[in-house]
Length: 401
Image (tube, rainbow, N blue to C red):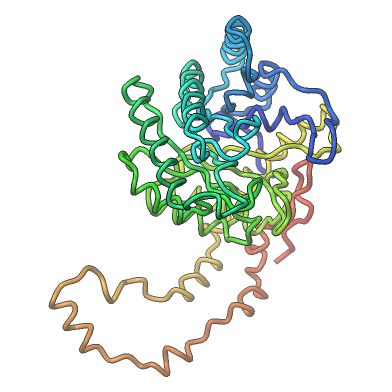
């Protein structure tokens, strides 16, 4: 068995809100004690994690005094220095406080919108205290339950205004952030604006500095809505906009579960890891997940280890898949001649294509025996997606050839 020990070069990161989640849900109070942010950093460093991310309120509680803020920042700096853990990403909580009940950047009240922008500015200052390079925007309250309440063009205008203002300000400050927008089709609002990767990509092109704005897609968000997360990530990569990614587990059609990475749908996770690794993704692999509500404090760290171990197992399996001669032969047979018959437009090329004769019957009847291939001796390579249990051990081994 390979060594699945996480190391900083793997760029695994966790949010303070993930390992610090106390097990509260909409129907129940916390099941475990809150964790001091500095203690979380030290523990993550000991486990081999690369970084820790935070919302502004995760680190400095909402409404904290300046003295309390200074004390927390000093303590957090010390923990980062001791552990070697980095802060690659920061974000602003614009969804918990009651003032954001009808949105932050898209609230109908201009004073609420201004407060949301101010809070984001202060959050950016806090992130730069620790060297964050990416700033994520998740619009958890940017949506509606009552469509008659506002012209749907207005929220887009207000969202654009906020992002353009914040981007111009942070550039003037010399912060050097890249913005990453996080789409989510539904929950906690009935209908959330800019719900998918495609929505976000189109919206980004309307901003003043689209080159500085990308995406932070999340596995659970797309899976809740029945979308293929691998395809969503591929579209972001194709556009050069995959600035960050949130990894977790989710059952389709359920509430936002934020389960341990790999707990559900190992096949999709395999192809997700393969997509990232095969195409040179070099930004953090962030686990936006939390331990089950049934976990005690010690089990939280087993959860964290399990997220990282599962990724490394799937990474190894993706490499094995790529190196398996039989599987690669099947793929080559499936794809046939990869040379394009269309290519870039030219008059000569267009005339040649118009004159081309195609054997429609032969192309129609070309065999594509997916079922036979899956049942072949190479099927163990499809089984690179075999389940991984909560302690990270493979629940099933490759069968003997």
